Image 1 (cartoon, rainbow, N blue to C red):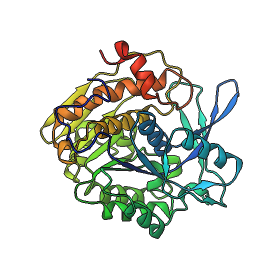
Image 2: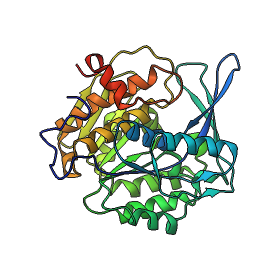
Image 3: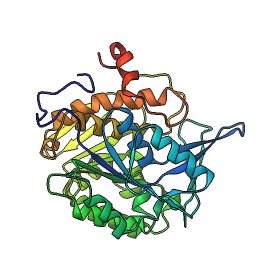
Image 4: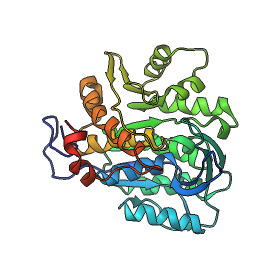
Length: 329
């Protein structure tokens, strides 16, 4: 099924996709190659998710603080060029957060400069006010460093608690051990959020961090017991698995020529959310494991497309349409 084709599962109350809210960090990825060459590119998991959704033609509002420094201007320009709505438009005096990404091998390694940076400066009152101004958002995505750094981490919990019963909530821990000084507090926050999370997207590395000593199946079962409806587990180029209380669905990852893997997981979850919005699916639809698997078959292709070029550069919908014979057959 092409990404933007109307599904038989879709509702009929309007022609356009539904609004998705994304909460989390923006930052600059300093990509360092093995030979020492360094490139500064816009990044951050939620930033990449928001851009993916918007590039695929679906409306998205991004909750993140943007600095007035040069990097902040670059990040703002990237969001505006991709038609991402900003929940808080004013700039912050704090500097832009940085992630140093060692890309010398196939698995990127990260170190972070995050404290007292602009991305995390949206407080609970600001976030709740902005969130309540959005008319019935269909989906709410939270994740990555927005679950760690204050005051955003508390704001995330407060906004999730304020979500309407009809809103699909997606939790993407995207764990960064080197940026998580208080493991117990972080794990407790993830556990609390599980009670209102419909879809949890994790990598095998995330599971190892959250559930040391447990295998993948048992870790996914623990997340389901915590309250989630679907647990999506990625493992690099290996098969993506979606767990529910009804069973497990497996979605193969298509082969692609890999330029780098930065942002691959973000493109996958962003692609799934864009597909969900385009087909006007609801929170209740998350209980259908076959339907989630249908969306994942598109999402893994979007992630593979992103891996085929340098940096976290998700595809535009027109690029997928041009390559439809390859990507959607």
